[in-house]
Amino acid sequence: MKLILNYLKNYKKIFLLNVISVFGFALVELGIPTIVARMIDRGISGRDAAYIWKMGGVILVISLVGVAGTILLGYCCAYLSTSVVRDLRNDIFRKTQTFSHSEFNRFGTSSLITRTNNDAFQIQMFMNILLRTALMTPVMIVSSIVLVLKASLRLSMVILATIPLIILGVIIVAKISESISENQQNSLEWINRISRENLSGIRVIRAFTNDNYEKKRFDEANLSYMKFSKRLFKLMSVTQPVFFLLMNLAGMLIYWISSILINQNSLQVGQLVAFMDYLFHVMFSIMLFCLVFMMYPKAQVSARRITKVLKTTPSIPTQITEHGEGTEGGNRDSGDLNKIDIKEIRFEHVTFVYPDGEEAVLKDVSFAVNRGETIAFIGSTGSGKSTLINLVPRAYDVTEGSILINGEDIRKLPAQELRQSIGFIPQKAMLFGGTIAENIRYGKKDASMEEVAHAAKVAHAYDFIMEKGGFEELITENATNVSGGQRQRLSIARALVRRPDVYIFDDSFSALDFKTDAKLRGELKKETKEAIVMIVAQRISSIVDADRIVVLNEGSVVGIGTHQELMKGCQIYREIALSQLSEEELANA
Ligand SMILES: Nc1ncnc2c1ncn2[C@@H]1O[C@H](COP(=O)(O)OP(=O)(O)OP(=O)(O)O)[C@@H](O)[C@H]1O
Image (cartoon, rainbow, N blue to C red; front, side, top):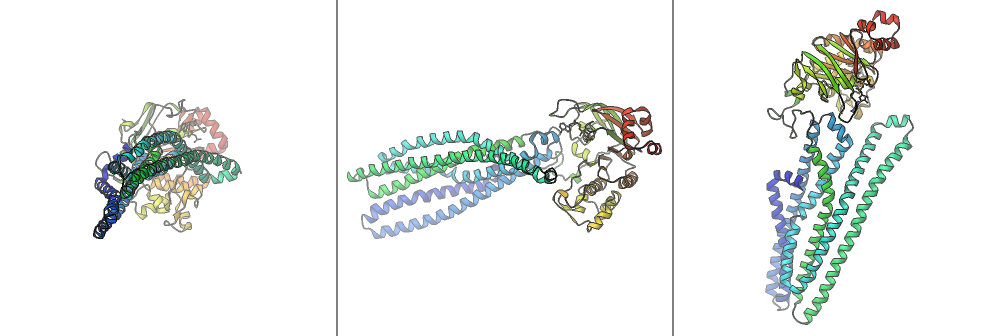
């Protein structure tokens, strides 16, 4: 509720209209029975046609006001609920943009998607009902109770006795449904996770003929969702008839008492008609109120899940705030950010433990690299190479030791500005929906066509782009219309177009054939001679000519030097080299 109120604050005027339309609606609903009662008791019983006509006119006017009020109410509810949920989604999205890898890992992608979509939708549904009824029902309940009491004190006792029973029932139902709703949302998250894995991993699933296994996994999650949804529906299906039964019993009792009162001439027929109408409104309003109350736990679970995301403080602050503004100087596109002129990167006794890990993945790592130099990292799988280079753009911060950029601790530098100066080519080339040109321009939004074409040429992507139909050719979802090697070359072009101070290649040549790899590196060398180049590679041939090679083993540096130096002085490096190249090739390297 607090979350909704916080967002409603931005729509005060429409909210006020909403309130006014509620009162308009109540006026009609409760005004008409009063007039009808008078028409019966004074107009019909007293055979006063003029009075009946007059009252008929009043009913017509009130009805028209009612129609206008109802339409306005519908409009306000729709406007407020959709606007608030749009703001909420925007804020969740912006917040997740500020998350570092730790927060992403903590929540999980599927959970963040469920929170952005489904949980926000739950809030929208709840708000729609809430805005329609939350204001209206108290107004209706209170005014109809006053009118009921006025109409007949004795009859009112029946209603007043029923209300506490209904309210008690609602509280019990709400309590039970809260935990079921929480489990239901978790099951939905589970379904989303499996769907995502299945859709993106369909090739692997088919290759391993694991279709049935995946079906079973999905069935399990789906069944769990069904189980909790069924429980909720069952609860509701018992609740509603019980409430109706209570209402009907109250109605029966009233008719019975009324017949006695009419016989005794202490109640008029018109009064009874009005009374039954008010009674209907009291009961109907209570029912609506119950509906809100029953939806409340589900919305509360969603609101809690959303609030958890919104309240999370990113472990590495970026310049984008929750509201999309730069912390310094307003709303800024990444293109407007200052760049840090990186001249030197120095690791000093860096030790790193993943936030959810126990053991250090990097242990006491030290090295330095300057502008114009290429440093390469090699080592067996899991030795910590990717982890190490991910520390440079501050995907995570070091656990111990420090990384210095131009002598200054990286933790003191704004993460966004730092990243502006880095061209990162990830291990798994990721492209976005859009044209090839748009994908390359992702590195630099205002790059000219010449710059885009030049980057593509250096990355050895130009020829295949032309074969595919040019830069305006569309990349399909998950980039299925480009091969692994082509994807890598496009992501290299994306980094090149940026002309950064630091290039980080995380095993980015692995999908290229040896010939393309060699030619591309030759071109890259010319392009990057002013920059710092950090390369993670599995192939010795990709790094032999690096100025410095760092050999990692189980997170520790076991050798630093040129290829020749390491061949002489580092046993692990020599073993890796000999496992890939012949003595003759190594001698020529
Ligand atoms: N997000 C993470 N959370 C916890 N542990 C992780 C995470 N990412 C990697 N690790 C662990 O850190 C260690 C080093 O992984 P890293 O990816 O840096 O190795 P690598 O040398 O790049 O391996 P490869 O050559 O196979 O890519 C591994 O044991 C891995 O399981």
